[in-house]
Image (cartoon, rainbow, N blue to C red; front, side, top):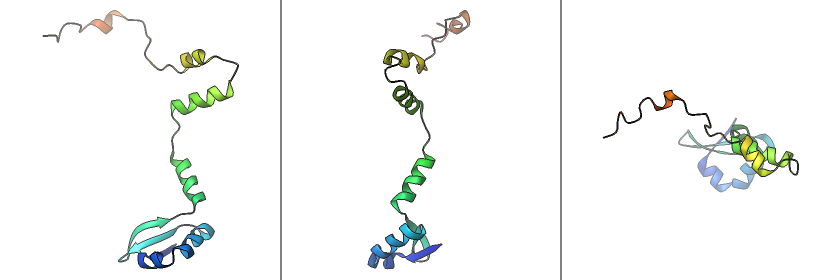
Length: 101
């Protein structure tokens, strides 16, 4: 683990940036306490992509790309419709009017 004081990074940023690209993160300290990290762009992208969770919108967009021309957008919208389309039952109306003023 490479840790350098902030004043050194300020004076030699290109050196430490090159180090981050070649050997990995460079930790920056102020008064012997860690305050930051220099990362290569590649390491940063890897970290961001690993921590990002796919959403249903991401899945829908991927599905649209894969099925382009095979299924209409309306059909895809129906597949990814997550609204509750359940049929109304008696139980869903048990408290209707009970709490109205």
